[in-house]
Image (cartoon, rainbow, N blue to C red; front, side, top):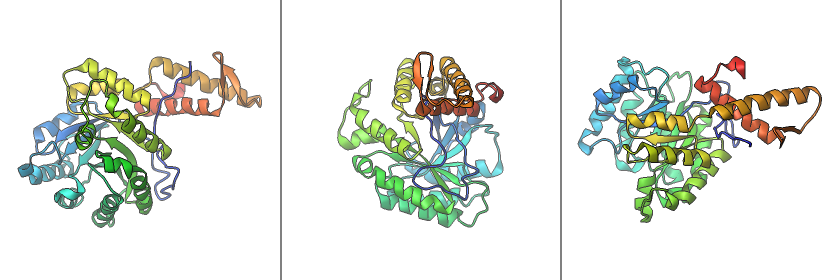
Length: 331
């Protein structure tokens, strides 16, 4: 049996941000945990969790009268270095471009002494909105001496956003050429999408198959990460596990989570299994031996192997190394 672990490669095919190409590497985002930005108590808890990415929220997780408090709390926590987040990527979700809150989010968050590693922008519907995001990031970050560009992920949460997805990606890649930000992924906002099209949610998410597949295909076409939807029933870990494995099989690289109890289940589902790791390491060893003898395609475990299969194995190896699942010397 041939295994394929889907991951995103840091540099996209359309254009390469040459200024930072040598610095960009794969950043695991198997679980992206939302944390209300106005709750320093909950932000503090991030330091006790081994989560790939924590997204401090200024949007849906925060009441309208708490928006100012949320952005200022996040900026303060990051700038003062109050908590050690360890390996966890420090992300922030701003408000929707058309909400009237987004520019204030940018002013405070990117005017602070320390800025987030990742910006997540919700409900991106049009090319003009992506252009607005890019232009504002240039205004607030363009003059700063940053060692690496800001990672940017945008959310698709409406029918018009899905229709415009390809052009939104192209605009984001074009605008990323100045090195201020690096477009790194696409995220699916399922509940807002269902509300937008009038769909009813089901346990197996059959009604969302088309949109999930379209997001994965577009993400992989440009070597972006694809982040799957939230499982809102955070107490049902069995349903979460099944939905996470389903997303992984579809090609998603990670999943949004809303409760700390969901983190371990999701990160396990989006990690290579021991069987996959063994297959990949042995496959690469066999490939290297055949290359030495001048052979191209070869048979491995009864299956004909060519370069696409080798690339799949290398993807698994890369992810394993980033996650420290086994020492690199063993691969």
